[in-house]
Image: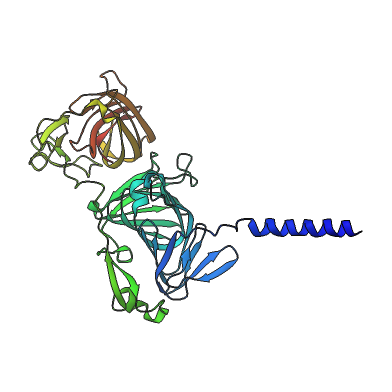
Length: 431
């Protein structure tokens, strides 16, 4: 009997030793901190509802909710800044910042409703192919950026203050589970230089660009209130805090735009030729040739227009550049029937890749017009050392284009015979 008691006591002692020596469960990693708060905003963490007060820590998986009049600023580990505006719900789906190797970082947010402003940190700058902001309708990828996104029940709108974003609706080629910017035929690029907003509604084929920035998305200054004299402020003080009168410190973030001003490649239509004085139906891209030629040299062209390029000395692209991928920025498309009558067509999106190592290019362009419906242009061909690219003369789709000397832009003209006539036009691409 005594032996049994001894053995039982020894077993209990050993079990206690194992419990005492076992490492404690690791605490969840803090990925960011609330640096400014207005109103009764909450952090949802599992079943817990925590106050989103100044100094509150955030973890991967957290949901930030703001009520009417609520406003939360978050500073992340990599220096990124996110402002969550009233009546919003932001999910921090994944956040991993590798300070030693920022290119290995992963950042993924989901804006389920409302409005946020996001200024990229080191993770998005160094690992932009591993950054994603999802919304219920579209995926947004960044290119070193400061942007604002608003999600309503059936639409998404975004504006860019610095840099660029790529917006793409979800489909088989753009999954919510992915990371980085999508590059399907419906993807659209928006840069700060465009001074526009990009909008997508649930019944649209692709996002559209609209000139001007509505007041609800207008954030003209990069200065943001970073600290407050109080840990958090009630909603009644929201206006003074956001205007800066309650802020004691300000942080100004500056980022280099991801794309150069839109002047390295310009399409000019030949005003001295018949029909060239005014643009063709569907062409809002070209300008009169005497404007396009100012400070630029002609590259490719046809009877309607030419592509003019800014050149600083001889243009020669070495083969070790590899492959450059571009997103469609704009296009002017026209359908001409067999009776010679022209009407506007629309480019819905596309892809363009130029492989300098193998001197080949590939492109896909999705077009539509009333007489033809949806039509896909698929083309490939040769690339010359001076950045010209073209299809063979016997190709069904004829494409001829050029790359900007800084490799940030490309443009090509196209012609595609269809049953009812011909689809033709000009394009401009960016990266």
